[in-house]
Image (cartoon, rainbow, N blue to C red; front, side):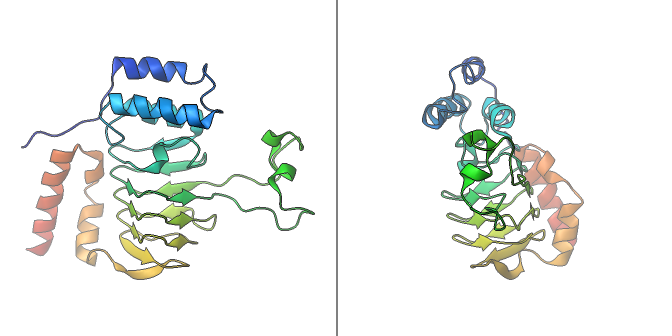
Length: 219
């Protein structure tokens, strides 16, 4: 088996992560982005950083799986309630919107439904959630709207697409609104891979298991 890169801790990164909240970084987005970028770089980048993942989960409500990367690592770009699986590739400029402005109120302005802005006592629109499955690739500039609550394992979303509904496992979707182009793999391959949970393994083990399973499915 070849050498396999693994998730990483760095002592200095952990110290910086402890200073993140006392310095007001969760509210001061620019400072937070600089701090988080430093933490992530100390641990080998977005793909491998454990401290960065813990910080985003605890302070920003965004859960990021192993070996995933993209703008989800910029504080505030992905809203609370987003969960991202393992081995996910997210292109630049991707945005997630978990809730709409209210249509039935006298105004659609967030001053009148977001309590953190100080006008109303409690939020008038419930926050949404989004699960992005394992081994998903989201192309640059794609937008995920509140109508989508799940992007399935192995799915591909074309660059610039507007996703308005759930995306099935191993589907390739694109367009505005995003529509099914075709399955990424044939049904036999999808069934074989889905039963392996290869995304729970480190890269070298994952490669070995998935390659063996696909070879067997073609035999």
